[in-house]
Length: 410
Image (cartoon, rainbow, N blue to C red; front, side):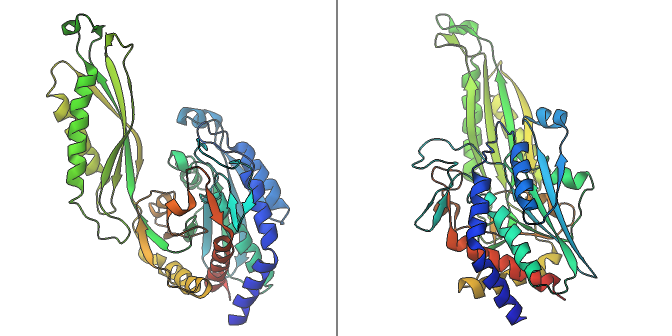
């Protein structure tokens, strides 16, 4: 088997320029979400995969469902590579939708420029990089020409930024796939087996508008919102005392990310809307968390007479909890990661939430691993000048290919 691992590494080295070009072509097709017109990228990905002899099934989410969800188009891809025999089917999932580039770039966010051993562009780190990692790992595996057992599926989906329900969640709910194991896009220096959950709410505070010259004739929705904000931020301080036992995850926290309201400078605000994000550690029960946040908001609203409050849940992403069946994945990734990177690859949790949870909720053991740095900050993920270090991309591809051979080699 040692010889087979050397052959995998050598194939990836020989074809690495082609892998970088594949990733560049993926980055050069924008997938800003919102607005979320992502079907063209799926089509381009399928065309590129066909050049490698991979047939990508195109699974278009119905347009009415996508538009009701707040996006424009989603086509998810599945590539099935069955090998036969008694072995697991391992799914490799990465998402192609990205947050818009934003300001501050010193390079074209869709130029896919290579400079000083780094490839720059939106989604080079999260997670079009792992379209290439996973594709070329499978190509390397099949290049060995040896009997394999089980199979591999590539799941390239387009809804992670909105919660995944129209990406992997939709594929799983439609019965289009049910793998035995999952590796989801991640970073190279750790194997992630748990992640935070996320609750997002829209809170609308209703008062009564009035002319600023006679404010007593109105009910100030903004002052009511301030009372709610103070209560939420006080709660956020208390969250620091709720500590997770999962390495890499600290405590719950809450963020108010958007505030809208009012009519004009000379009008008492009659309505104010808050959007808030509550991150849950794996030990928390989402239903209890939601009930508690609602309690805090309503209790604070009651302290300001005259206002009413509507609370609407925008998102519920459950935490990822480790399933016992993930050990073959974890152990293989750690063993090969240490060989390839020359250092131990720890098992940890992450404060992010990701699509991996959607597989875990259906009893599919899942881990997060792929091409990227030690921390999100190092890669500028979701910020200006996002990039991936090409040496990390090369090495992570070797780790995934070696892991697949460990799981599927005869």
